[in-house]
Image (cartoon, rainbow, N blue to C red; front, side, top):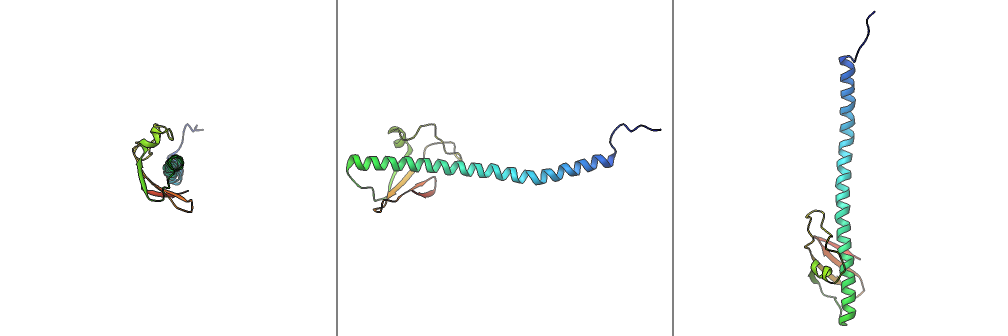
Length: 122
């Protein structure tokens, strides 16, 4: 009688085929998950800056007794200087904070801003 001490070539090939199929199925979903998470991070960055800009504009409106109904641009350094955001907030795609924010408050009270190339309405 002969003892069997290992796997046959057919068994090893079957294992390789199974592992290859698993990789083909999982790799696209993993890369999609990473892309989706970076997109969500960029969207949260934009919303954070827009909300900080809205707060800044509302406080400045009240302090200066004027209306910001025209499009106004300012840099994120203004928001840092007045304490509306921390300087450790970074754009996930560029890894910097230096961004120009364009804001406009409509007479109806709707507030919109353009941050990192995308318009956001609040």
